[in-house]
Length: 93
Image (cartoon, rainbow, N blue to C red; front, side, top):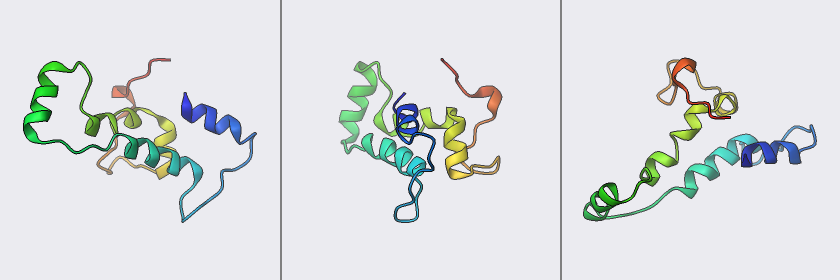
């Protein structure tokens, strides 16, 4: 929803390019950076056993691989590591 709010805030205008990245690319990079964390192996194992949420390193990229807008922003192709076939992408809304 945050991505769509960002796009709506542009009022139909093209996003500005900053440091060589479009606004859409910066949005997705910020999302991934927001999930960065550093933990010892023992702490990660404990979280895997007790926390119902996926580890941050997966939450940082996995949801993006379901969004067509992510593929458009970075021109992701079938040969790229983050590519997922459209028929296996999750769509909730």
